[in-house]
Structure formats: C-alpha cells, structure tokens
Length: 112
Image (cartoon, rainbow, N blue to C red; front, side):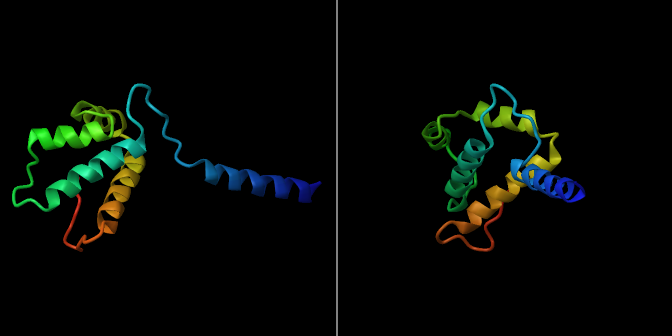
C-alpha cells in the first residue's frame, strides 16, 4: 500500500509539472503565443532600421498578419502584467526567438 501511494504521488507530481503555468486565462485577451509571435515580428522589423520607430502602416500590416491590433497587445500586457513569473517567461521566449532569427547578432536585444 505504501509503495502504491509513493507511485501515485510521484505520478501526480509529474503530471502537475506537465500542466504548465497556473496563470488563469483572461477571456477576451489574445493568447500568449499570438502576443509573442506578433511582438517578435514587430521587434525584428525595427532591429534593422536606423530609427527604431516603426511607421504606423508597417506596424498595422504586421499586426494584421497575426489577426490583432495594437490594442490587443496592450490588453495582453494590462491583463497579465502583474503575473511576474508568467510575463518573465513571455519576455524570455521573445528574446529567445529574436536571437534565433537568421542573421541575429548578440547585440540584438528586447526592450522590456
């Protein structure tokens, strides 16, 4: 019986680790992956510009490709900004994807 409980406990701990982040989803707000993909594309577009300000038309074109608008990104940050661990994971993933881009240099960074 003790062995059975030990095995069950180990299984439950393993499954809990697979569930992932415990941050609740906020209804009406874009999902984490959509935010990351859109943000990475926006940052990647500005990294090669002498002026890091992206023209509105270019920004809107990139966001439309992801099915979002600027307000969607702001709403995501407003909804999840207080979830520090969650947002740290978001920014870490953004940085990882930016650094993984072909031709990306170590000097390429994410403005948080």
